[in-house]
Amino acid sequence: MEQLQAKLRRLADEFAAGEINREQFYSIYEHYQAQLNLASAMLDEVEVGGMPTASNVETIMLRKKLTAVAQSAAVYLNQGGQLIETLGAFQVPDTVVKTTIRGIVEHMLKNGLAPEPITQQHGSEWVLYMPGRYSTVVMTFTHEPVIRQVAIVQNMHHDFETANEAALVSGDTKAAKLVFPFVAFVKKSISGSRRPRP
Image (tube, rainbow, N blue to C red; front, top):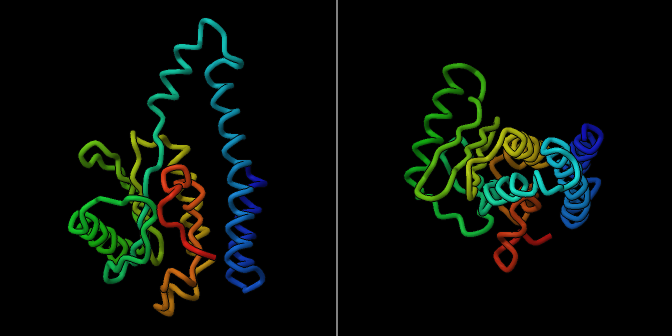
């Protein structure tokens, strides 16, 4: 899995350097992300006890039923709280998001570092705030995300900021010029919904 993460990081660097276009980025990123998802699913199977048997089928079914599924995402600039893009049907009220982002920025100013990811329940959804140097990704889930899922979003956010650093620094954050690695993660829920065009 570490080799795949390294490939994803290189891909973000290549986009940042202008070596690949948006369409190439999305296609290759989704390919690597699918491989990561497969590896993660295999780890889950091993943790439950290998191949399904009569004794562990119920456990596998419960685990699957209660697994957090990403429903939507939104990306905000930390400074000023400007919305850059939404993916899927993002419905967390803007006032709730901006209040949390203000707290994140205050923490960064006080401590010099972004705080740890924040997970909160909002209505029937779970909301994950993933702060970075320039932006915060806010992602909604059907259930509480597990540590492995939070780590995946954290890696994707790092790739987002690496690939788009020049635009984030300059303030030229038009969604049509940026790449959003999170598309692969919320793809099932946004099929038929808006996807950034290459």
